[in-house]
Amino acid sequence: MQKMIRILNIKELQTFYMGKTYPFMLSVLNDDLEGFIGKAKSLWLKLSAKEKIKLLCPYVYYSNIKLDKDYSTEHVYITKQGIFFFKAGFIWNGANGITLDTLGTRLASLVHDAGYELLPEWLKEQIDYELYRIMYKWSVSHKPVVNNWKDRIMYPARWIKYKLSLLRAKSWLKALLWFGSGISEEGKQEYKSFEDWNKGSFIFDKE
Image 1 (cartoon, helix red, strand yellow):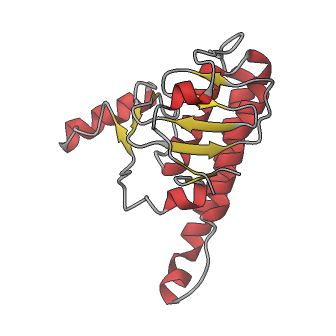
Image 2 (cartoon, helix red, strand yellow):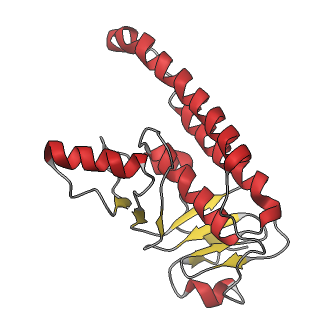
């Protein structure tokens, strides 16, 4: 049975999060914006849904979506088992609307945008719920704990942030279920097999 060498799940992905930087993701439009004017322009790009994010390294995500066949484009391959393979260089729109720019929202929008782009319309609800699943796990993983006196002081603020994060996930899901659009009608399948698509982006261990 093949075992993949480079697998990143949500918890492992968090180890890449350092301060307010995302070493494996790059905001294409606003990373170079500095100063007050730059921050104002960055906010406008985010609120007007014009921010784009680029994936800097290959990434794999395991979803709960089960498909009738594989779907693929140049940078994304989704297997029948619901595994999302992303090549470095994939660009997506990020979270639309007013939302905090966190690793959780970036990961959720990554999977959601790819699902809308590749998968057929009858899977829309499953794709929307997958975004909620990511956001819920992200929120729960940041549930505040008390280990020292500093944690006790910050606990009320962190608890409110945690509850707001859960509320945001539910609100985002409802908005997508009601208003989400732009999904492919029949889905996309540009490559005949994973091997044709992969071309060395992912390395496998044969053990």
